Length: 139
Ligand SMILES: [Fe+2]
Ligand SMILES: [Fe+2]
Image (cartoon, rainbow, N blue to C red):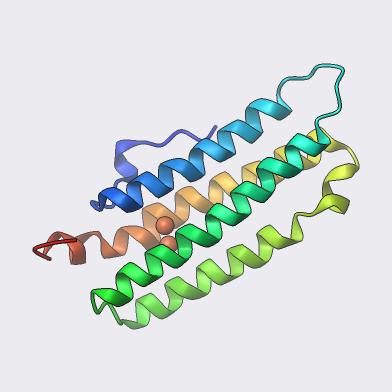
């Protein structure tokens, strides 16, 4: 789960770095839930989840700023921003209440949604600016 692959490269080093960090945080959460020891990891889970939420905010903003800075003002970009917004909304719905009960199952379900969303978003939506940046002299 949460393995970054070369096929996820959007050709912009800083963005690749941020995507990798998202995968790392997801992996950290997955490894924690898979520990299956006798300890309750609720606080740690919430901490990493908060970090993942914060980093997602940061990444979306920096991706959008970069695209705006380079004049990528297309209809596609508007839709792209909407996708970010709806994911943030979804992430916000993962809260203490949704995790406390049946911890492992609920976190695994949430992680599988997050992994699916992120990889699809990178491969389909983020990938659409790869060509645009490849034609710019400096990114
Ligand atoms: Fe994006
Ligand atoms: Fe992205």
